[in-house]
Image: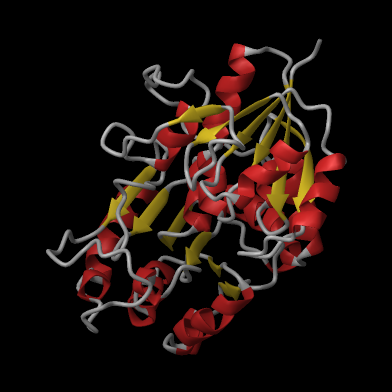
Length: 342
């Protein structure tokens, strides 16, 4: 009988991308395995660009919502899987595979999930410091060592998908003959992850002097950040700049990033997308740490200062100065960019 597995997805784009090597290992161990995902709507497009995933079921639940009767109702529609891999560590995340009667329910013990999971791993953060390692461990039997090296996550963007996205966004007529440099100035987690807008503006000015086409990408909430950066640039330098924040669906953002010749971004979901597409990438780290969720790609470079106060993993700088990013100068980042553009 064909193995069918259900992946219960994380709530963040970056974490979801970190799960792709797990899926690759599951299909390597069981060729022909059908893998579907149960995912929040905002990260579902990432699964559609993973080569291992067949169907994506949308999870309708808000953060923190228990909704037991609705979870039970959804679980009745998800019967027939032989395995489930529960990636979040919450109690709620493990309910649907249990209600669906999936025989093999795999995950870390997490929030007292002894009855909900029947293949339980115990997390040793010292042995598995990175998110990608923790997810990949679920492909092993509990207690077995993780097979290394772990392959880099990968997403798919075909030339046809890219052409469709350019056409739908009206970028064919307005684009440059040269592939764009993409700036991602936002970070959903909070301002302590965001490189200052004046630094982005200085970097944009330095790169645009060579005629570079610069596109700003991110969510609708990031649009104001891109507008503020563009307002700091002379009008003559904005000719090849486009503010696409909030103008793209996530799958379109994947296609545009796949077309880029360089991506400069904060520690964010778009950073992990750029890495999974193997684009030249400069990742800016301040309050967070690349030791836990680094960009995993051969062409990724991290720019950070390693100050004594970082990483603090706070949404806002607890000291009020954000020196971990303010002191990371545009000149330093430009130097890294230039090595990536060679």
